[in-house]
Image (cartoon, rainbow, N blue to C red; front, top):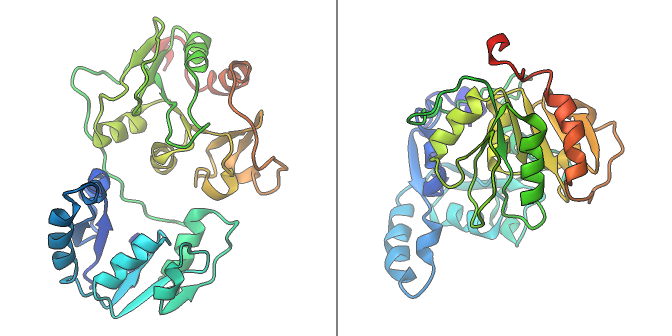
Length: 306
């Protein structure tokens, strides 16, 4: 969005977003208006009572141009309902969404998702420079939580099947770094068993509190997920764990970050030249040692030398 603001400093920019993700836009100088898409309310028997008022409000937006960065039928329909004079989308859009586009940006469907979105912004007139501005909020500190001594933030949960780390791996990770604090965050229905140096904050942080933890953590380890991408934007000390997902397409957009895939540890800027399996395998207890060797020089055991 920042590149669009730079291209059109006087434009009125509206971002359509799910309400739970709206805190990401707090204080964002590039967005004038936020329009909620309350997806959860459009389910069940009472969906029509929520949907009709939303449709009425959406029709009042009437932008000169709508950009479909998601590339799905739902997002293309929202653009159409908004009354946009023109709709632009990407060439790898799915579910028939391309039928709604007035102009299509040619993108590499094997390229990184950020680069694909930048191609769409470029199609709309933006100029893409090597330095991208990413105004993510500073976040909210947690009550009664001190960022010292230094800690490692572990985000082991994801929606996709096979992405999340097992309880055994989480425990092994904590043991490998003891006595350094390991702070575990994320949303999970299953409980986890923790060891002495582990602080379990699962299901206990808001999105803005999570952003603050990511910013102040000495190192972040995360499975492929939304919080991983936030970490890539605000913290260079990051390891992203990929099982079946392709880090060349959805890995951290930060050349200083690290990636684990199929037993290999690689810098993000090494991925294009490396030969890695697309599918890969799950992260196992035996993989923790190599991760510990990577992170230990950055996170000292003795907080006095931090």
